[in-house]
Amino acid sequence: MPEYQTHEHDVLVIGAGGAGLRAAIEASATRVSVGLVCKSLLGKAHTVMAEGGIAAALGNVDDRDNWQVHFSDTMRGGQYVNNWRMAELHAKEAPDRVRELEAWGALFDRTPDGRILQRNFGGHRYPRLAHVGDRTGLEMIRTLQDHGIHMGIDVHMESTVTRLLTENGRVVGAFGYERERGRFTIFRAKAVILATGGIGRAYKITSNSWEYTGDGHTLAYEAGAELIDMEFVQFHPTGMVWPPSVRGILVTEGVRGEGGILTNSQGRRFMFDDIPDAYRAQTASDEDEGWRYTQGDKTARRPPELLTRDHVSRCIVREIKEGRGSPHGGVFLDISWIKQRMSNAAEHIRKKLPSMYHQFKQLADIDITKEPMEVGPTTHYVMGGVRVDAETQMSSVPGLFAAGECAAGINGANRLGGNSLSDLLVFGKRAGEFAAKYAQSTGLGALSAEQVEQAARAALEPFERGAQGEGPYQVQYALQDMMQDLVGIVRKEAEMRAALEGLEKLRERAHRVGVGGHREYNPGWHAALDLPNLLLVSEADPRSAIARRESRGGHFREDYPDKDPTFGKVNLVIRKGQDGRMVVSRVPIPEMPQELRSVVEAMK
Ligand SMILES: Cc1cc2nc3c(=O)[nH]c(=O)nc-3n(C[C@H](O)[C@H](O)[C@H](O)COP(=O)(O)OP(=O)(O)OC[C@H]3O[C@@H](n4cnc5c(N)ncnc54)[C@H](O)[C@@H]3O)c2cc1C
Image 1 (tube, helix red, strand yellow):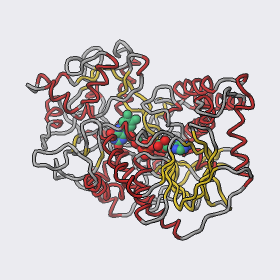
Image 2 (cartoon, helix red, strand yellow; image 1 turned 90 degrees about the horizontal axis):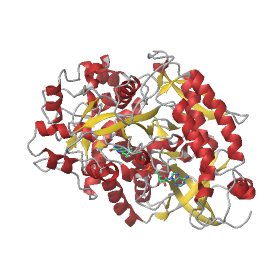
Image 3 (spheres, protein in one colour; image 1 turned 180 degrees about the horizontal axis):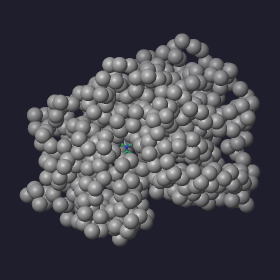
Image 4 (cartoon, helix red, strand yellow; image 1 turned 180 degrees about the vertical axis):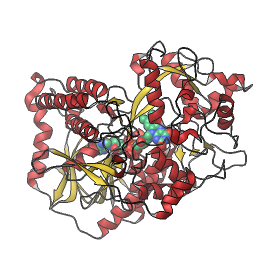
C-alpha cells in the first residue's frame, strides 16, 4: 500500500455542522482523542445558514409548554411514523441543550424579564423557538466552535471523505482527499460519527448549500448500514422565486411566525380554505384570531400559515397550478401588512427579520417592510437517513454512529421547523458520548490495503478519462432537472419509474465523466466525486417512494392521495443487497408504550 498521510484518532467525526461539533465536544470531554473532518472551512457548515431558531420546550413565553406538548407536536407533525423514543428523548433533553449553549456564550434574543425569547413556528403549539433574530445558526456554530476549539479537537478542514474503511464489518477509519492540494488522507479511528447533513443538491430548486450531496448517506450505505425514511423529503413552502439566480434560497418560517400572511393573485388568504382535520381544533377561525396568536395572545389559535410545511407547500402548489400564482410562478408572502396593526412596523420587521430584509433588498430589490415577497416551495431537508439506535446513535454497523440531518428517525414523515437545530444538539451530544464509550472499549482495527487502493483508484478515474470525458456538471444538472420533475412535491408511480430508468442512464454517463488539469483545488474533480453520492440518494428516494403507496407528510402521491393505516405502522428501510442492488423492506414500528400513547391522546 502506498504511503498516504495518516491520522489516528479514537473518535473521528465527519462533518463540522451543529451535530458534528456537538458530538466532537462531547467525545473530547471524555478525554478520548477526537478528529473532525469537514469539506469547507470550520464555521462554514450548512448549520450556519439556519435562521428561525431552536425548538425547545423552555416555557419562557408560554408556561403551558413542556416536553409532552413538544413530543406530541413532533409526532403529529411526523404523522406517527417517527421513532417515538427519539422524539421523546429530543423533547425531554432539548431545553438542557439550549441552556448549555447559553452557558457557553450564545446570545439569544430576550424576553422583557431577561429569559431566552421564543417564537412561533409551524406545527408548534406554543412559541418554542429560541432564536437570535433570524441568524440562529450562525450563533450556534460560533458558540460551539468557540467552545470546541479549546478542547483539543484536531480539525482537518477542506477535506472530503470518500469511503469508510471496515474490518470484518466494523468501521476502522476513513479515506479521503484534501480539497486544496488533492492529496489522499487516511484516518484511522476506533469509532466514526457521520454528521454530514442532507441531500438537497439532488434537486434543482433547493435552499441547501453545495455541501449537501448525500455523502454521509452514501458512506454509510456502502459500509453496510441501513437507511430509513428516504421517501420523506421536505419541500419548504417559502423559497425565493425571483430573480432566477436566487431561486430556492430560503425565506424563513419566522416571517410567518411574526405575522406574515400568504395570498394569491386575487389577494385571497388561501390557507384558510384548506385546514386538515387533525389541526382544525388548533387553528384560528379568522384573520383576527391568527394575528392575536402571533402577538402572544394565549387565548388565540395559530393562523393557518403556521400549519406544517408539507401542507402549506401543497396549498401553494395548488394555487400556482390553478392559475392564481404570482407573476414569477409563486404566491405572495406579506409581512408589510402588519403596518395596519403596528405603528412601528417597519422598524419591528427590520429588527426581527434582519437577514430577510437584507436578502430581499439586495437580491431582489424588494423592501419587505413595504411590499410583499414572491415565494414558492424549495427542497429543504431530508427526513430520511442512517438508521440509528435511539439511545446511542450507533448504526447497524459496529463503530459507526450518525447524528444530525444525515441520521433519521426523529422526524418521521415531516420535520417541524426548529426541530433540526435541537436534534443536532441532543443527538450530537449522544453520538459523541456513546462513540467515545465505544472507542474506550476497543482497539484500532487493521486497515485493508485493498480497500484503500480501491478508494484511491476510484478517486483518480475521472483524470484517466481526462477532459475528453463528459463534464461532471452536465450530469449533475441533468440529475437535478430529473429529480425536480419526476420525484418532487407531487409524485406518481409512472414518473418515479421513469426517474429510475433515467438514473441508469445517468449512472452510465457518470462512469464516462472526465476532468482535466491536476489535483490541486480542482472543483470539476470534486463535482465528479460527488456524483456517485447524488446518484445513490436519488435512487433511494424514489425506490422508497414507490413502495410507500400512500400520502403522508412530505411524501405526496397523486395516485395514492390518502393515508393508508397499514403504512402508518411501518418504516421503509434500504440497504445494499448481496448482489450489490438496493433492497427496500418494510420494518414494523415498535409499539409505543402506554405512557407516551396517553401523552399523544391527551394533546389531540
Ligand atoms: C437556509 C436554511 C435555514 C434553516 N433554518 C433552520 C432553523 O431555523 N431551525 C432548524 O431547526 N433548522 C433549520 N434548517 C435546517 C438545519 O439548518 C440543518 O438541518 C442542520 O443545520 C444540519 O446540520 P448538520 O450538523 O446535520 O449538518 P451541516 O451543518 O450541514 O454540516 C455538515 C458537515 O459535514 C461536512 N461534510 C459533508 N460531507 C462530507 C464529506 N464527504 N467529508 C467530510 N466532511 C463532509 C460538511 O463540510 C459540513 O461540515 C435550515 C436549513 C436551511 C438550508
